[in-house]
Image (cartoon, rainbow, N blue to C red; front, side):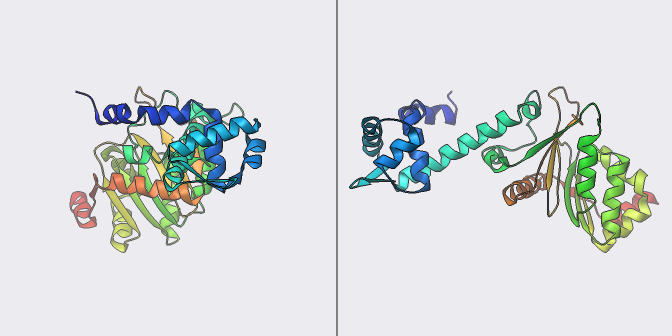
Length: 278
């Protein structure tokens, strides 16, 4: 049985091929997405002849992607939507190519389909890698940014003592921390902080802990930055690379990812934590 995507491709293959096989048509669509243009302007932007530009515009017009008013060409409503998706596709390839070493041989199972469809939101992210002179560069860069955060949301399938220390500092200065943890990392947190201290934070309300059966991605979101760490396909966590970003699109994407994992997590109650200690 054919999947939904294959069935849709059969219906729209001619439309997809029409755009993707023509560099000129794509350039014109992208140019017109910014603003309506005259033929001379499009000729200069595409570095091609007037006849080639006019032929491409005529083809786009036949597909109801472009309209003309005299010598002025502009995107139709349909064309604007298609151009936006084309831009998103280009941005996605840009992200994957720019940080190929980050995505290659890594597991992406921790990212749901609806957020993979919005990968273009990560276009301004940058990669922090270990270097010979500083093998801890990703971790220390991350801790430095974390030390200035007042509101933290984190999904942690892995954790280190210095990481937990920074979370405690945030809590002690009155910040808010929401954690999605695996059972193993939760036990590590208890050992590091102690039952009574965790109970204090939970009762006060500035710490919330949620337990999840499995996490295939590590990430932290604050009011100012997001960091992402991935596992290799063999299940080993890659501590040598972090993808980081600070713009609103990345933070919104990260908050949506956190909300997605929160749906599968169970909140820890401080009263049950105290009973376990007794």
